Image 1 (cartoon, rainbow, N blue to C red):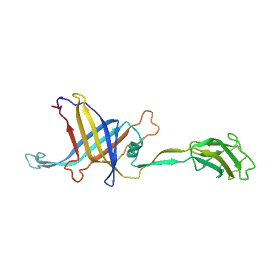
Image 2: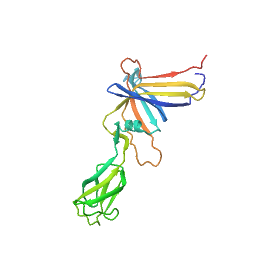
Image 3: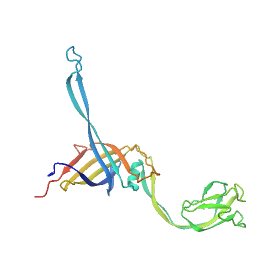
Image 4: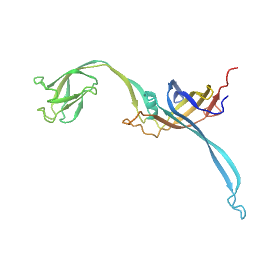
Length: 251
């Protein structure tokens, strides 16, 4: 490269591997850090001789797995699943109606109605459908989660069966099943440039084993980052765990 210094900028692409099978290359993602650290283990033979006690007689450096740390500032379903050592899947709810669905009252506690995204208009009656109860007086609702709580001051008897009628909306999203793996494996590509000369720097980690050990704070005071520390392996067919390609200027 032309420059005599390096100040990097770039994007991250991630290709998750499940049982060695690619799940597709996703990205680009914004990152704060993409750090690689080669490691060696130094074996030394030291003397206990009278005149050279403690001196090194021989030294051998043995290669150890390289470390990497990826810190993503972009938090989405893929990066969160990686951080939580989990898997993500689509989850949907089609719209419909709760028609006199039974719910057993537990005064002072929430009870699920079995559906989320409950509509504004809700009818709550006793088991005979003869008495209609009043929201805010007899019960309160958590409409997004689809839950009802009978108030302790209500005339509704604890353990009574209620009939709830309401519409609910269609929803869609992602369900992350956390802590389902001891590690997550993925290929990482850094598509970068050296801002000192504008030339490309492409780093490829063939297979990184993420063993996330950093907490993800859902109530952080500032924007969260996803920190993914891990080790690299040299997969079959490769002679190195990672490559760095420095692109020269076009001629």
